[in-house]
Length: 141
Image 1: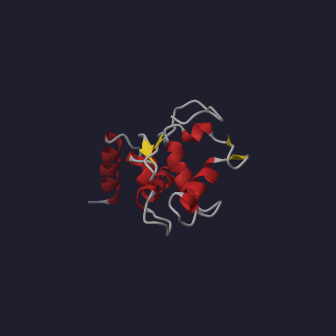
Image 2: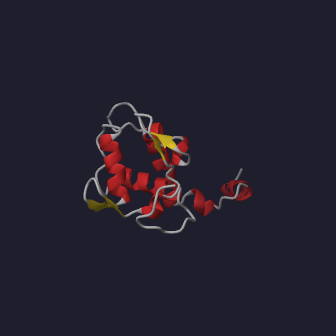
Image 3: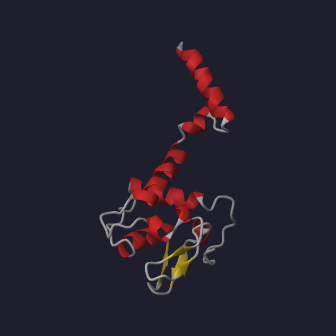
């Protein structure tokens, strides 16, 4: 099959799946996919757990801490940051929160600020809030 015919067939298949040829190569979509992979599988050299251990179902449903305490989903996490953290007595960003979870709950080495891994995790968690209204300082849902 010639390259042009192959390209046409691939375009038709992607369009029928609701994906444009451009979206298949979109860097943001790749960051979200890579972030989801990290969220589900990366232990960050810690206690063997992943983000998904507490934030079950990819973070879209209610979760539980290791002590059994219920925690809300991450479905609006990107809309409520930055927010004031009374324990830390400072305003924290979503990036700060993710790094804190990795260091504390997972007992791992948090991704370095500005790193591709942190950008991918933030991209994935932010994607869970798509379409939700900004509510800085609001309550997790």
